[in-house]
Length: 194
Image: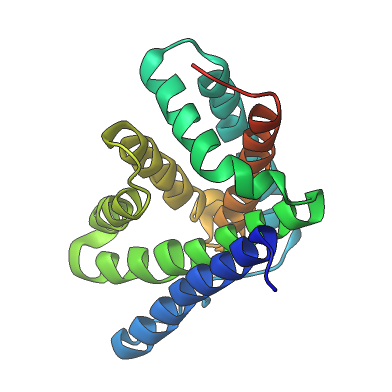
């Protein structure tokens, strides 16, 4: 018998795995290797770790603010994800953060951004890939806007240091998601309400 915790993890693996299938399937059709720019090197590690800090600071501010529209987003996240994430241990949250970071970055920065760039240049690639990123993360119009802006940040991070490296946005996205998941769990356990 499957537990809600186990069912949630299985759903996450299937959903995020589907994103990998899309990236490699469409990448194969378009002649784009979604992991062609993935390099495991010290520069990528340093840029990825350092690049996580600004997003985490913005998240911390937005998560603790009294701005009504941001508190509504927090409430939606706590209500929708809190019960599932609270059943997870720290290892599970780390797994989920890295699962989302790796798969989504391979799709959005590894395939979609270069594919759009081939047709509309660097700026078009950045904008169009993150319009799709925003739509996929639609919870509300404001949340989609924030997701799109985060995607643009990740798109810039892809090219930080002068040489494209997919490791940088993967690390930023993965660590950010893990920290955000932990914050949702803490809010859920504390009984967050508007």
